[in-house]
Every structure is written in structure tokens, then in C-alpha cells.
Image (cartoon, rainbow over the protein chains, first blue to last red):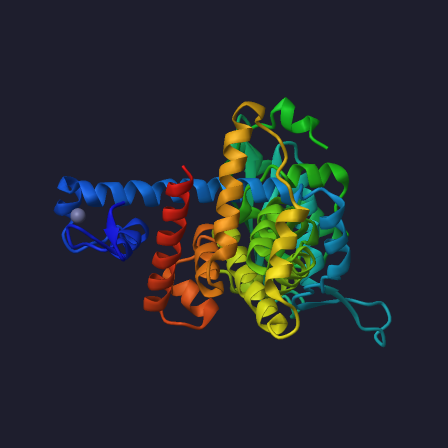
Length: 197
Length: 194
Ligand SMILES: [Zn+2]
């Protein structure tokens, strides 16, 4: 880069080229292609950017794995507050008792059913309807990811059936509809990945 | 925490968006899987920004606490990685502001590179590449503080000018200028070095 200050001999500034690299915008883009000074400046900035990526990779490698003790000790310190969601009343044999379960516990139940199916993992789930009123009609929506190779329609049908049975057994919710959306198709786990600690 | 080892292993295979959705529903195992997945990147960027190994781990922890509380507000769950890095950026700058009058910054910043030698993963290329990286570290350490912050937030945390402006409480035009000055100085140093 033959420069006086930040300005190239062609009149453009390195600051303009720096912004161009980030935004793709510059006053006269046609000039860039034909100007050796700008080409050299851009090459130098791109080289720096690659070196920056190398430094980042080196820093990330030096930071260690997310499965190492440092991360475990951070996770141990977090004490994440629970997200109970809405309170769902339960019938009680004794009228003086007031029993509740939480929306969060229902979500956890739904996830455990979906996760238990081979090659399937639950994503977000939602209970639509007034769960705080006994007998109110509830619609369940569940996102799932399915490993490539499993028949998705069939998987959704099996899960819908299992969720209906489990929710009927463990809850008093009046489930009207269970909607299952396959949001992701996952790569099958590779042997090398399974060997990782 | 919830989640059997088998379930955790399964969570390691699913995409960010799904984990973020589960975590927003209150699934701590999914949140921990996200933390483990992006922890090294968060730690690395916090180290480069704060220049302190201890502060960096505090920053990662504060970031995760804030992320857990605010996951509901994340509109695009697939963008959770960038969102975490933005929080790391803000928390790191907060740490620097708190520390400003207490410690000689240069001493602390040098501690990072003394304490974290990169691993030798590619022996053939390693000598040349790692000496280039060392030269970049030295050049970075000599930059004015505000320029270095802009550069790291852009290159490591992948933030836009507007996001960096919010994090540093300066205008986007200042970000553009400082980033350009940082790059010009670094590029010149590296050219001389090459
Ligand atoms: Zn030019």
C-alpha cells in the first residue's frame, strides 16, 4: 500500500475500502475493478481479515472444550430459575385441598415422550387454550426434529398417538388437537461423533 | 440438572433453533447444551475483549444468566449464537468500564496471551502461521483501546456497526472510523512483518 495518510494515490481512502468490505457499498464500484491501488488496499485488508479468523480459531482452540471443567463450573454456578408457566388446577378428592401442576411440567412431559422415540427430538411446545379453567379445550403444538431416514408422516402419527395417551393418563387437560410440525431433518449421527466424550 | 447422558448426547446433534426453543420453554438441559456448544467461542471473545482470563469466565457466566432470563425475547431462535455473542460483547465492555480505574490494563491484557498458547494442531503449517498470529496479537495489543474494541467486536463477535455503536455507546460513524484506523494500522504492521 503506497499511501500518504489514509488516502490512496487514486483519491479513495482506506477507510472507504474498509467500510466497503463490511457493507459492500462504495460510491463508484466500477472504479474498484480497474484501480490497482484500490485492489492492493482491498487485498491487504482481506489478508488481515483472514489472519483475524486464524487468530479467532486459535483463541477458540485455546479456550478449551465446552465439555471441560471450566464450563461445568460455570453451569454449576448458574442456578437457573425454573420457568413454571401457567398454573393448571387439578381435581382433588378433598375439597379443601388445592392441587396444581405447572405448564412447565406438561412441556417437560411432552418433550420426554418425543425424545423417547428413536431418532426424534422435541423442540418448542405450546399449550393453546385456557389451561387454568378445568375442562377448557386445549390445543397442543409441538415442533420436532427427525433424523434423516425416518418416515416423517409416520413418526408424527406415532407421536400424536403417544402424546394423546400420555397426556390423558398424567393430566386432566381436555386435549382437543395435537399438532406436530417437523421443523428439522437431522444428519444421522456419525461414528466419529459418537466416540466423542 | 435434568437430562440423562443419553438425552444430552442426543441434544448435541440438534440445531441451535430447536435447543433455543426448548430452553425458552424452560428446558435446562437444552440450555446447557447451547452453553457447551458456544462456550469456547464466548470465552475466546470475552478473553480478547477483556484481556483477562478471570473476567472472561465471569462474562460467560453473566451472559448465560442474562440469556436464560431473556430467551423469550429472542425472535429468531436460529440466531441464538449471534445473540449470545452480542451479550458477551456488552458484558465484556461493562467489565472493562468497572475495571478502568483499578488495574493497569496493559498488564492484564498481556496475561491473556501468556496464559493461552494455541494448541499445535497442524504441525506443518504451525510455525509460520502461529508466528503470524503472534505478530497480530502484538499489533493488536499496541492499538488504542477504543480501536481494539471495535476491531474485536467486528471480527470476533461479528457485530454490525450499529450493534457495536450500541455496545460502546458511540455513533455508527465513529465505529466506522475507528474500525478503519484499526485495520489500517494492523494491515500495515502485518505487511511490514510479511
Ligand atoms: Zn482506487
